[in-house]
Length: 114
Image (tube, rainbow, N blue to C red; front, side, top):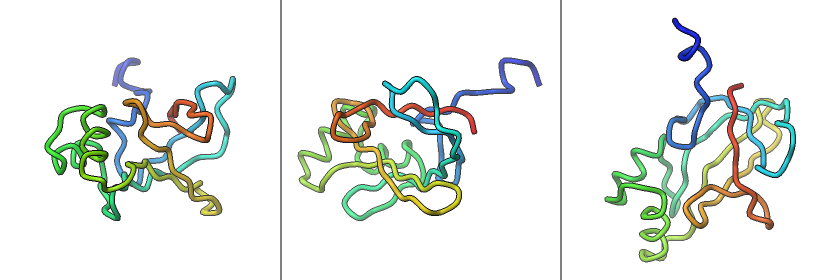
């Protein structure tokens, strides 16, 4: 394996349910050391293991279209759901303006290799 392939940075488009990542808000200088387990994407009570499956279900090609379609169908927000590896905290990043955000300040979600 070459250096380029050893440490592929995870993205919201590449992670699948069960993946472990380090997750943080864009404005924070450091990534928390606590590993997070990605549980999947949730929309209208339905769970999707990856973004490709969610986009296929909605018949769209990108995050802006996912957000538009979710709003049009009035099925609620689309969230990327996480749980810390110790199983204590369950939280979700919500889709807004074409990106997954965290908190009331709508900070962009950042993922790093765990």
